[in-house]
Length: 102
Image 1 (cartoon, rainbow, N blue to C red):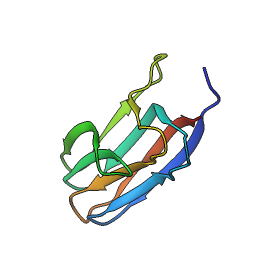
Image 2 (cartoon, rainbow, N blue to C red; image 1 turned 120 degrees about the vertical axis):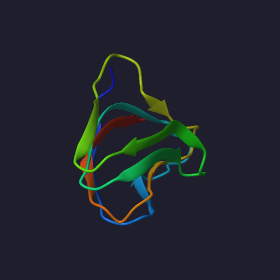
Image 3 (cartoon, rainbow, N blue to C red; image 1 turned 30 degrees about the horizontal axis):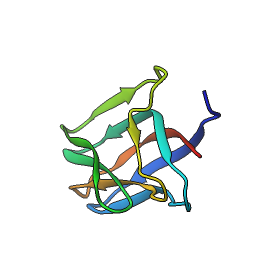
Image 4 (cartoon, rainbow, N blue to C red; image 1 turned 60 degrees about the vertical axis):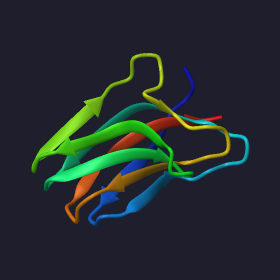
């Protein structure tokens, strides 16, 4: 298993947020994540080219999700693209994503 890097999720608007910047020839693999939505929100994980990596997740207010490490990545970007999170509402979304980029 690769050494994992941590990115903080701290979003309070309806926007697309780059969590992991693109790097030439590198692939982002997400192995763990924890996310919590203070208000109703739909979260969509995308690569930095706007391709959806994980189906949209609808959250009720004060709900969250943990995807724990199990040996295989939950999401993988194509080479040279970063990782983004799209939020549908101006409600606080917080958490952490643990990834490798090689």
